[in-house]
Image 1 (cartoon, rainbow, N blue to C red):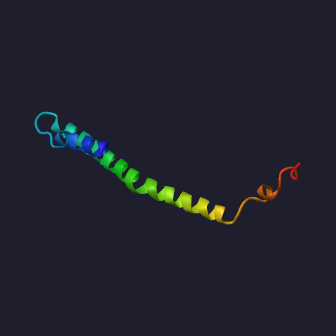
Image 2: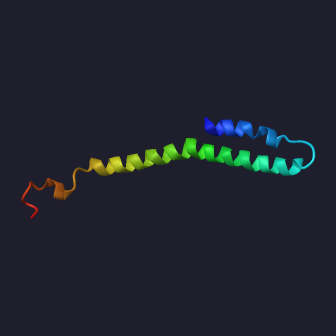
Image 3: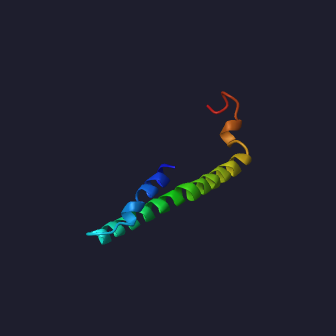
Length: 77
């Protein structure tokens, strides 16, 4: 929500008119585009990577404990 509030706050920068407005519009476009890209990555890509990592680690756990975990105390010495 903070990202979207920041983007909405930069809209006047993006729609600037008057002296020096071209520089402000270019800066507004870059700032808004960067925040939209970062928000998209944060909303879509991070959960997808988390899901894949959890799926891979879950598959590793499904094969059972490691062989050294099967030893009773005192057998591994």
